Image 1: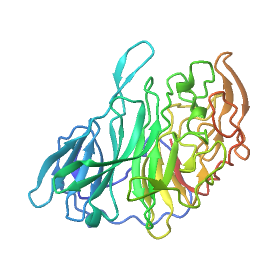
Image 2: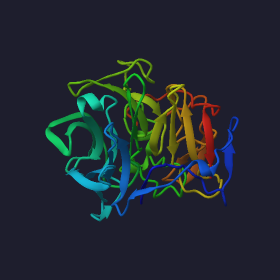
Image 3: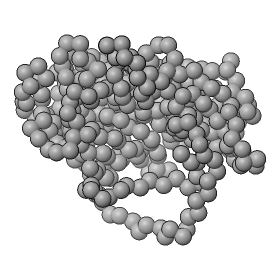
Image 4: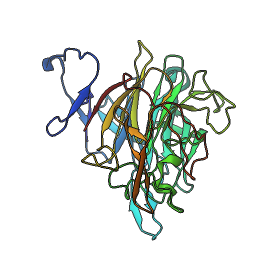
Length: 357
Protein backbone atom coordinates (compact mmCIF):
# COMPACT_ATOMS: atom_id res chain seq x y z
CA UNK A 1 0.00 0.00 0.00
CA UNK A 2 1.21 3.50 -0.79
CA UNK A 3 0.77 6.89 0.78
CA UNK A 4 -0.07 9.36 -1.95
CA UNK A 5 -0.51 13.10 -2.19
CA UNK A 6 -4.01 12.46 -3.49
CA UNK A 7 -6.56 10.19 -1.87
CA UNK A 8 -9.21 8.86 -4.23
CA UNK A 9 -12.44 6.93 -3.68
CA UNK A 10 -13.48 4.75 -6.59
CA UNK A 11 -16.06 2.13 -7.25
CA UNK A 12 -15.62 -0.70 -9.73
CA UNK A 13 -18.91 -0.63 -11.55
CA UNK A 14 -18.61 -3.83 -13.54
CA UNK A 15 -20.96 -6.40 -12.08
CA UNK A 16 -22.69 -4.12 -9.60
CA UNK A 17 -25.55 -1.67 -9.59
CA UNK A 18 -25.22 1.89 -8.31
CA UNK A 19 -28.19 3.74 -6.82
CA UNK A 20 -27.42 7.45 -6.61
CA UNK A 21 -29.88 9.91 -5.13
CA UNK A 22 -29.69 13.63 -5.77
CA UNK A 23 -27.90 15.54 -8.48
CA UNK A 24 -24.42 14.48 -9.48
CA UNK A 25 -21.78 17.14 -10.04
CA UNK A 26 -19.38 17.24 -12.96
CA UNK A 27 -16.25 15.24 -12.30
CA UNK A 28 -12.98 17.18 -12.43
CA UNK A 29 -10.66 16.40 -15.31
CA UNK A 30 -7.97 13.84 -14.58
CA UNK A 31 -5.17 16.17 -15.66
CA UNK A 32 -5.89 18.36 -12.64
CA UNK A 33 -4.33 15.76 -10.35
CA UNK A 34 -0.80 14.47 -9.99
CA UNK A 35 -0.05 11.28 -8.08
CA UNK A 36 3.26 11.08 -6.24
CA UNK A 37 4.41 8.02 -4.30
CA UNK A 38 5.91 9.18 -1.00
CA UNK A 39 6.64 5.81 0.62
CA UNK A 40 5.60 2.19 0.34
CA UNK A 41 5.97 -1.39 1.69
CA UNK A 42 4.10 -0.86 4.95
CA UNK A 43 2.54 -3.48 7.22
CA UNK A 44 -1.25 -3.02 7.00
CA UNK A 45 -1.45 0.80 7.22
CA UNK A 46 -4.80 1.86 8.66
CA UNK A 47 -5.16 5.63 8.87
CA UNK A 48 -3.22 8.87 8.50
CA UNK A 49 -3.35 12.39 9.88
CA UNK A 50 -1.56 15.57 8.81
CA UNK A 51 0.41 17.78 11.20
CA UNK A 52 0.89 21.53 10.88
CA UNK A 53 4.65 21.09 10.42
CA UNK A 54 4.06 19.14 7.21
CA UNK A 55 4.63 15.65 8.59
CA UNK A 56 2.17 12.84 7.91
CA UNK A 57 1.51 10.47 10.79
CA UNK A 58 0.11 7.03 10.03
CA UNK A 59 -0.54 3.82 11.87
CA UNK A 60 -0.17 0.11 11.10
CA UNK A 61 -2.60 -2.44 12.46
CA UNK A 62 -0.02 -4.36 14.49
CA UNK A 63 0.81 -1.24 16.50
CA UNK A 64 3.25 0.91 14.56
CA UNK A 65 2.95 4.69 14.75
CA UNK A 66 5.09 6.17 11.98
CA UNK A 67 5.80 9.55 10.45
CA UNK A 68 6.68 10.68 6.96
CA UNK A 69 8.91 13.76 6.87
CA UNK A 70 8.51 15.73 3.62
CA UNK A 71 11.84 17.49 4.17
CA UNK A 72 13.94 14.35 4.48
CA UNK A 73 11.51 12.15 2.51
CA UNK A 74 12.02 9.45 5.12
CA UNK A 75 9.66 7.34 7.25
CA UNK A 76 10.47 6.90 10.94
CA UNK A 77 8.96 4.65 13.60
CA UNK A 78 7.84 6.85 16.48
CA UNK A 79 6.35 4.18 18.75
CA UNK A 80 4.87 0.71 18.83
CA UNK A 81 1.56 0.59 20.68
CA UNK A 82 0.83 -2.74 22.45
CA UNK A 83 -2.35 -4.12 20.88
CA UNK A 84 -4.33 -7.32 20.45
CA UNK A 85 -4.63 -8.63 16.89
CA UNK A 86 -6.17 -12.08 17.43
CA UNK A 87 -9.43 -13.86 18.21
CA UNK A 88 -9.76 -17.17 20.08
CA UNK A 89 -12.94 -19.12 19.34
CA UNK A 90 -14.72 -21.52 21.67
CA UNK A 91 -12.77 -24.45 20.21
CA UNK A 92 -9.54 -22.73 21.21
CA UNK A 93 -8.48 -21.84 17.67
CA UNK A 94 -6.43 -18.63 17.54
CA UNK A 95 -6.82 -16.56 14.38
CA UNK A 96 -5.50 -13.25 13.09
CA UNK A 97 -8.36 -10.82 12.61
CA UNK A 98 -9.13 -7.11 12.21
CA UNK A 99 -8.25 -5.83 15.68
CA UNK A 100 -5.12 -3.86 16.45
CA UNK A 101 -4.24 -0.18 16.14
CA UNK A 102 -7.30 1.03 14.26
CA UNK A 103 -7.62 4.81 14.39
CA UNK A 104 -5.54 8.00 14.49
CA UNK A 105 -6.20 11.73 14.40
CA UNK A 106 -4.41 14.91 15.47
CA UNK A 107 -6.17 17.39 17.72
CA UNK A 108 -7.47 20.50 15.87
CA UNK A 109 -5.21 22.54 18.18
CA UNK A 110 -2.18 20.31 17.63
CA UNK A 111 0.11 23.27 16.90
CA UNK A 112 -0.56 24.45 20.45
CA UNK A 113 -1.10 21.27 22.51
CA UNK A 114 0.69 18.53 20.47
CA UNK A 115 -2.10 16.03 21.21
CA UNK A 116 -2.90 13.00 19.06
CA UNK A 117 -5.65 10.42 19.57
CA UNK A 118 -5.43 6.72 18.81
CA UNK A 119 -8.04 3.95 18.97
CA UNK A 120 -6.71 0.46 19.66
CA UNK A 121 -7.55 -3.03 20.92
CA UNK A 122 -6.25 -3.44 24.45
CA UNK A 123 -3.50 -6.11 24.49
CA UNK A 124 -4.95 -8.10 27.41
CA UNK A 125 -8.52 -7.01 28.20
CA UNK A 126 -11.51 -7.46 25.88
CA UNK A 127 -12.03 -3.81 25.02
CA UNK A 128 -11.21 -1.12 22.50
CA UNK A 129 -9.67 2.07 23.86
CA UNK A 130 -9.66 5.69 22.74
CA UNK A 131 -6.63 7.43 24.24
CA UNK A 132 -4.75 10.70 23.87
CA UNK A 133 -0.99 11.27 23.94
CA UNK A 134 1.34 14.25 23.62
CA UNK A 135 3.75 14.04 20.69
CA UNK A 136 6.92 16.13 21.03
CA UNK A 137 8.93 16.03 17.84
CA UNK A 138 9.60 12.34 17.24
CA UNK A 139 8.80 11.28 20.82
CA UNK A 140 5.44 9.97 22.00
CA UNK A 141 5.28 10.95 25.68
CA UNK A 142 3.96 7.81 27.39
CA UNK A 143 3.42 9.59 30.71
CA UNK A 144 1.00 11.97 28.97
CA UNK A 145 -1.39 9.17 27.99
CA UNK A 146 -5.04 9.77 28.92
CA UNK A 147 -7.62 7.03 28.42
CA UNK A 148 -10.72 8.84 27.25
CA UNK A 149 -13.23 6.13 26.42
CA UNK A 150 -13.46 2.32 26.43
CA UNK A 151 -15.73 0.00 24.43
CA UNK A 152 -16.29 -3.53 25.72
CA UNK A 153 -15.88 -6.21 23.02
CA UNK A 154 -15.89 -9.97 22.46
CA UNK A 155 -12.84 -11.73 21.01
CA UNK A 156 -14.42 -15.05 20.19
CA UNK A 157 -15.41 -14.28 16.61
CA UNK A 158 -14.35 -11.69 14.03
CA UNK A 159 -15.16 -8.91 12.93
CA UNK A 160 -15.71 -5.17 12.39
CA UNK A 161 -13.84 -2.62 14.47
CA UNK A 162 -14.40 0.87 13.08
CA UNK A 163 -11.88 3.31 14.51
CA UNK A 164 -12.28 6.21 12.08
CA UNK A 165 -12.25 9.68 13.62
CA UNK A 166 -12.99 13.24 12.59
CA UNK A 167 -13.52 16.59 14.34
CA UNK A 168 -16.19 19.17 13.57
CA UNK A 169 -15.54 22.91 13.62
CA UNK A 170 -16.48 23.28 17.30
CA UNK A 171 -14.14 20.53 18.48
CA UNK A 172 -16.52 17.59 18.82
CA UNK A 173 -14.85 14.24 18.09
CA UNK A 174 -16.72 11.64 16.04
CA UNK A 175 -15.60 8.01 16.43
CA UNK A 176 -16.86 5.07 14.37
CA UNK A 177 -17.31 1.80 16.27
CA UNK A 178 -17.85 -1.49 14.42
CA UNK A 179 -20.54 -3.96 15.45
CA UNK A 180 -18.07 -6.64 16.72
CA UNK A 181 -20.49 -9.32 15.47
CA UNK A 182 -19.91 -12.46 13.43
CA UNK A 183 -21.84 -13.09 10.25
CA UNK A 184 -20.47 -16.62 9.84
CA UNK A 185 -23.72 -18.52 10.43
CA UNK A 186 -26.13 -16.10 8.74
CA UNK A 187 -25.50 -17.06 5.10
CA UNK A 188 -24.69 -13.45 4.29
CA UNK A 189 -27.94 -12.06 5.73
CA UNK A 190 -28.63 -10.30 9.04
CA UNK A 191 -27.05 -11.87 12.15
CA UNK A 192 -30.06 -12.28 14.44
CA UNK A 193 -29.16 -15.48 16.29
CA UNK A 194 -30.96 -15.35 19.64
CA UNK A 195 -30.07 -18.87 20.77
CA UNK A 196 -28.38 -19.21 24.14
CA UNK A 197 -24.63 -18.83 23.90
CA UNK A 198 -24.81 -17.22 20.45
CA UNK A 199 -24.69 -13.55 21.38
CA UNK A 200 -21.56 -13.01 19.23
CA UNK A 201 -23.80 -13.83 16.24
CA UNK A 202 -26.65 -11.53 17.32
CA UNK A 203 -26.22 -7.91 16.26
CA UNK A 204 -29.33 -6.91 18.16
CA UNK A 205 -27.03 -6.86 21.21
CA UNK A 206 -24.76 -4.34 19.49
CA UNK A 207 -25.75 -2.19 16.51
CA UNK A 208 -29.45 -1.93 17.49
CA UNK A 209 -28.85 -1.82 21.24
CA UNK A 210 -29.32 1.73 22.56
CA UNK A 211 -27.26 0.85 25.65
CA UNK A 212 -24.17 -0.45 23.83
CA UNK A 213 -21.48 1.53 21.99
CA UNK A 214 -20.85 -1.05 19.27
CA UNK A 215 -22.27 -0.49 15.79
CA UNK A 216 -22.42 3.25 16.40
CA UNK A 217 -20.87 6.59 15.54
CA UNK A 218 -20.12 8.42 18.77
CA UNK A 219 -19.87 12.17 19.27
CA UNK A 220 -18.06 13.54 22.31
CA UNK A 221 -16.26 16.75 23.33
CA UNK A 222 -12.78 15.88 24.69
CA UNK A 223 -11.72 17.90 27.72
CA UNK A 224 -8.17 18.98 28.53
CA UNK A 225 -8.01 16.69 31.58
CA UNK A 226 -8.73 13.56 29.52
CA UNK A 227 -12.43 13.33 30.30
CA UNK A 228 -15.18 14.22 27.83
CA UNK A 229 -18.48 16.04 27.73
CA UNK A 230 -21.63 15.12 25.81
CA UNK A 231 -22.55 17.71 23.15
CA UNK A 232 -26.17 18.78 22.92
CA UNK A 233 -28.10 17.14 20.11
CA UNK A 234 -26.91 13.54 20.29
CA UNK A 235 -29.45 10.78 19.66
CA UNK A 236 -30.38 10.27 23.33
CA UNK A 237 -30.37 13.05 25.94
CA UNK A 238 -28.18 12.43 28.97
CA UNK A 239 -30.05 10.55 31.66
CA UNK A 240 -32.35 8.66 29.29
CA UNK A 241 -32.72 5.15 30.80
CA UNK A 242 -31.17 2.24 28.90
CA UNK A 243 -29.23 4.47 26.50
CA UNK A 244 -25.70 5.79 26.04
CA UNK A 245 -25.50 9.57 25.57
CA UNK A 246 -22.32 9.29 23.44
CA UNK A 247 -24.36 7.83 20.55
CA UNK A 248 -24.82 10.16 17.58
CA UNK A 249 -25.93 7.58 15.02
CA UNK A 250 -26.65 3.88 15.49
CA UNK A 251 -27.70 0.83 13.51
CA UNK A 252 -24.32 0.36 11.79
CA UNK A 253 -22.60 -2.83 10.70
CA UNK A 254 -19.10 -1.61 9.91
CA UNK A 255 -18.84 2.17 9.70
CA UNK A 256 -15.31 2.91 8.58
CA UNK A 257 -13.80 6.31 7.81
CA UNK A 258 -15.98 9.38 8.49
CA UNK A 259 -15.67 12.96 7.31
CA UNK A 260 -17.46 16.24 8.05
CA UNK A 261 -18.57 18.66 5.34
CA UNK A 262 -16.94 21.92 6.47
CA UNK A 263 -19.75 24.04 5.03
CA UNK A 264 -22.85 22.13 6.12
CA UNK A 265 -21.57 20.17 9.09
CA UNK A 266 -23.10 17.00 7.62
CA UNK A 267 -21.44 13.71 8.52
CA UNK A 268 -20.46 11.19 5.81
CA UNK A 269 -19.10 7.66 6.10
CA UNK A 270 -18.83 4.38 4.26
CA UNK A 271 -20.76 1.32 5.44
CA UNK A 272 -19.60 -2.17 4.52
CA UNK A 273 -22.49 -4.58 3.97
CA UNK A 274 -22.95 -8.38 4.23
CA UNK A 275 -22.17 -10.99 1.60
CA UNK A 276 -25.51 -12.39 0.40
CA UNK A 277 -25.65 -12.41 -3.41
CA UNK A 278 -29.41 -12.78 -3.89
CA UNK A 279 -32.69 -11.70 -2.35
CA UNK A 280 -34.39 -14.58 -0.54
CA UNK A 281 -36.91 -15.33 2.20
CA UNK A 282 -34.05 -14.53 4.62
CA UNK A 283 -33.98 -10.95 3.38
CA UNK A 284 -32.37 -8.67 0.79
CA UNK A 285 -29.02 -9.29 -0.81
CA UNK A 286 -26.02 -7.47 0.61
CA UNK A 287 -25.53 -3.76 -0.09
CA UNK A 288 -22.70 -1.40 0.77
CA UNK A 289 -23.61 2.19 1.59
CA UNK A 290 -22.13 5.66 1.45
CA UNK A 291 -24.16 7.54 4.04
CA UNK A 292 -24.98 11.10 4.99
CA UNK A 293 -26.32 12.20 8.37
CA UNK A 294 -27.68 15.71 8.71
CA UNK A 295 -28.25 15.00 12.38
CA UNK A 296 -28.51 12.12 14.85
CA UNK A 297 -30.46 9.04 13.84
CA UNK A 298 -30.94 5.29 13.56
CA UNK A 299 -29.67 3.74 10.33
CA UNK A 300 -31.32 0.37 10.64
CA UNK A 301 -28.81 -2.48 10.85
CA UNK A 302 -29.41 -5.40 11.42
CA UNK A 303 -33.10 -4.94 10.63
CA UNK A 304 -32.74 -2.89 7.42
CA UNK A 305 -30.20 -2.19 4.69
CA UNK A 306 -29.94 0.08 1.64
CA UNK A 307 -33.11 2.13 1.21
CA UNK A 308 -34.65 0.43 4.27
CA UNK A 309 -34.95 -2.96 2.66
CA UNK A 310 -36.25 -5.05 5.56
CA UNK A 311 -34.92 -8.29 6.96
CA UNK A 312 -37.48 -10.65 8.52
CA UNK A 313 -37.30 -12.12 11.97
CA UNK A 314 -35.55 -15.48 11.75
CA UNK A 315 -35.63 -18.37 14.22
CA UNK A 316 -32.18 -19.96 14.02
CA UNK A 317 -33.27 -22.98 16.10
CA UNK A 318 -36.34 -23.81 14.03
CA UNK A 319 -34.88 -22.36 10.82
CA UNK A 320 -38.11 -20.51 10.15
CA UNK A 321 -38.65 -17.03 8.73
CA UNK A 322 -41.12 -14.66 10.38
CA UNK A 323 -42.53 -11.23 9.64
CA UNK A 324 -40.41 -8.44 8.19
CA UNK A 325 -39.25 -5.63 10.44
CA UNK A 326 -41.02 -2.28 10.14
CA UNK A 327 -38.67 0.69 9.49
CA UNK A 328 -41.22 3.11 10.92
CA UNK A 329 -41.50 1.23 14.22
CA UNK A 330 -38.46 -1.03 14.73
CA UNK A 331 -38.39 -3.07 17.94
CA UNK A 332 -35.60 -5.06 19.57
CA UNK A 333 -36.91 -8.09 21.49
CA UNK A 334 -33.60 -9.95 21.59
CA UNK A 335 -32.67 -11.54 24.93
CA UNK A 336 -29.21 -10.06 24.33
CA UNK A 337 -30.56 -6.50 24.19
CA UNK A 338 -29.80 -4.35 27.25
CA UNK A 339 -31.30 -1.17 25.81
CA UNK A 340 -34.68 0.14 24.74
CA UNK A 341 -37.14 -2.22 23.08
CA UNK A 342 -38.72 0.46 20.89
CA UNK A 343 -36.13 2.07 18.62
CA UNK A 344 -36.16 5.36 16.71
CA UNK A 345 -37.57 5.13 13.16
CA UNK A 346 -35.00 4.05 10.60
CA UNK A 347 -33.65 7.02 8.65
CA UNK A 348 -35.45 7.68 5.40
CA UNK A 349 -33.05 7.42 2.53
CA UNK A 350 -33.26 10.93 1.24
CA UNK A 351 -30.36 11.18 3.71
CA UNK A 352 -28.36 8.45 2.02
CA UNK A 353 -26.30 9.46 -0.97
CA UNK A 354 -25.44 6.12 -2.51
CA UNK A 355 -25.95 2.41 -2.00
CA UNK A 356 -24.77 -0.39 -4.23
CA UNK A 357 -24.07 -4.06 -4.61
